[in-house]
Amino acid sequence: MKVLRRLGTLMRYTVAYAALTHCTFEYIGDFVLCKGPSMEPTLSSDNVLVTERLSKHWRAYKPGDIVIAISPINAGQYICKRIVAVAGDQVLTQNPHPIEVEYSMDPKKPKPIMTKDYVPRGHVWIEGDNKGNSSDSRYYGPIPVGLIRSRVLCRIWPLTEVSNL
Image 1: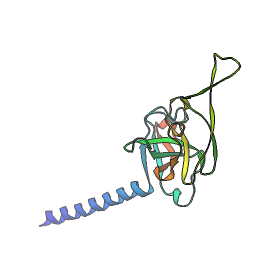
Image 2 (image 1 turned 30 degrees about the horizontal axis):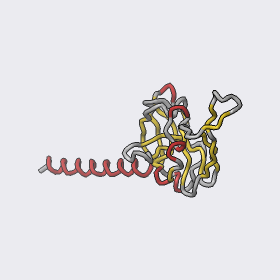
Image 3 (image 1 turned 135 degrees about the vertical axis):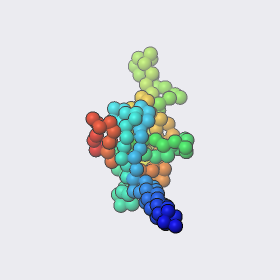
Image 4 (image 1 turned 45 degrees about the vertical axis):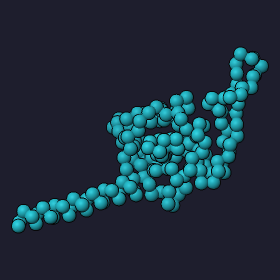
């Protein structure tokens, strides 16, 4: 009987700990392993980040915030990008794969077309810091704020690069 009582106590503590851990990671914040080159040089692949999910309830996202979001082109993947513009802001973008090309004075040097976009209400414009190697809003347009999972607070790994972001 004594063993069963101890086992029951252990199970109660285990379930309570699991519930507390789940709620913490789901509603307060968590740890994220950054993969890929799109945020270099700010973040490198295999950096561990601390993120939070609470500020969205009392503070709007601002340009400069680094966020973790669900990819708008692959719902099973998370992306780490910087917010460049918020609802109502105008964004001047250079089409990464121009269909039409305007020619400058030198016809051998094509100049990609620049376009102006406005970020609609309830959306943000995100881009990677490594513009040459990032799939972001320049490809798929502004993303809904609802796809943002969390905001990055700081990098905790590698230890030599611990910093607030």
